[in-house]
Image (tube, rainbow, N blue to C red; front, side, top):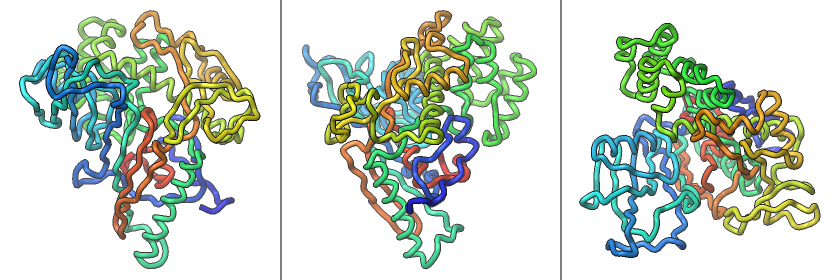
Length: 444
């Protein structure tokens, strides 16, 4: 992309979740990452650090913990785990959460053996890979490998013949990758963190942090927008008027969390007790989504208004050390004179231990003041299990192992493969490539 080009307009949906700016200039290719042909267009595979784990094919006194791969399509991780518990009475623990609109492979552990090597549900296949000497921990997850097909829009005139159009799209992709490799793309939280077509999780989290628990319930049950299907919008409008047994009977199957929450309110009229009927992982996700929204807004402000460089730290900035594979190491405070090639600046995540440090900390603090919250608000004594301590997040999006490959390219598709550290979103990289006018219709 050429220097000096105008940056593309940011869609309203992006602004709702704090994505107020693009990291790169120029227009995107306006392709799609969603296909009606199945879920193979978006493949995600977890990468774990196997060095610190001893795995045996046979269970013995040392290797007592079963490890499985969970392959799923058309269902998110939380609901996939519920399927296995409902059908087999098997409780599974996952290292990461994966979206429904993808074909995913992830690692899980169980509370017992499964009496064979495979179990199946409608959406999933669980396969035993062996027994480890300890339970897998979230720190064992290094990142995710993505294989993604971008469908080019045949209605767009890219200029010239189909071959030259394809060449132009490829050039766009490579330009973005050069920016990612140079650590110039912001490490924003992606759409999935907030609910994609119905970005509501951070709004529920905000209500919880502000101790407006009834508002949290009402927001989750009734918030809707133009992207939700007609049935969902109709049910939510009815829930605004009254919750009744009859109304609950009209809640569709896929809105199981809403049904459980509505039942809780009908039975107890206590929003905290009703919220606690949702899985603890979901409740915690609400507060973490609000934490992510504040991060996105602060990072957007740093790039859009302050002109801060997410690549080069200044004296006093907190930084992570990174190795040649872009794996994150220890944290340091940058002294202003050392080489910046092996460090990346970080921004604090708001939580109950938050203390403003450096220029990025001050930005987070300014967003918190706008939101009228403090770090201490994120310790929710009324629902302690959803409290978040805080933390740190790298500012640039990092390519794990610095690998990016164009697997296939023709006049209709561009298929790419790359890996990102855990917690980073492929959709943020693809957002820069595509710069969608309508993120929902293009698969984000």
